[in-house]
Image 1: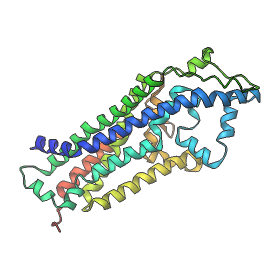
Image 2 (image 1 turned 180 degrees about the horizontal axis):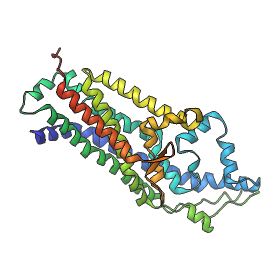
Image 3 (image 1 turned 120 degrees about the horizontal axis):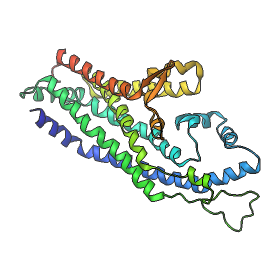
Image 4 (image 1 turned 45 degrees about the horizontal axis):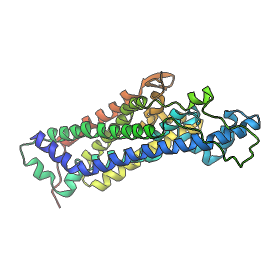
Length: 323
C-alpha cells in the first residue's frame, strides 16, 4: 500500500515538479548569460577605469558597495569572499540568489504543508486511513517523495548551469568600439591572468547539489512537523513561511551587523553555503563559535528530526472530524 500511495503522490506532483525544475534550470542558464555579459563587457571597462585612477579591485568594490542598499546586495550574493571578476564566483551567485532561495522555500513549504494538514483540510485523510495504511507509513511515503523529488530539483539546477556554461564558454572580452578614444587599456583574453579568472569548471557545481538538497530537506522536515500539528493547510503554510522568513532575515542581519552575528548559527540559512564547496579545496564545515560543524549534518539533521517529530506527533494525535 505504501508503494501505491507513493505513486499517487508523485503523480499528483509531476506537473508542479516539472515546472519548478524548468524554472530552476532556466534561471541558471540565464544567470550564465548574465555572467558572460558582465565579465565580457562591463567588468573589464570598470577594471580599466580603476587602473587609470590607480585603484585596486578591492578599492573599486568598496566604492561600489559602500552605501546601505548595495552593501545588503553584496551580503546576499556571498559577501567579500566572492570575487566579482572571476567567472566561477559569479556563476556561484546563481545558487544563493534570493530568487533561487525563494523557489526552494516555496517548494518545500508548499509540499510539506499539504502532506498532513492539507489532507485533513480537504477531508481526505479519513479516506486514506480507511485503507490498510498506518499513519507511520503515510509519513514514510512523504519522506520517500522528498528522497525522489529533491534530487530532481538539484539535477535541474546543475543541468541549467551545465548548458549555460557550455553556451558561454570560453568567455570572450569584447573589444570596445574603435571610435571610442579610451584613456585606459581594456584587459584582453591574451592576458594569462585574465584567462585564469575567466576559466570555468562546470562539473564543480555538482558539489553544490548536496547543500541545495540539504536546505530543501531541512525546510521540508520542519514544515512537515508543523503540518502534523495543524488542521488547516494555509495556517500551516503561513506559520512555516514566517519561520523561514525570520531565519533568512536574521542570517542576513547577522552578516551586516556584528552584534547580531551570534544568531546566525540558529538559522538553517547559515549552513547553506554552496559557494564554499564549489571552489577547489572548498570545505564542508562552517564555524560555530570557533568549532567546525559539518553543514550537511545540520541541514539533513534538521530535516530528519522534523520528520521524526512529525511521525510521533501524527501517530499520537486525534484527527478532527471533517467539516
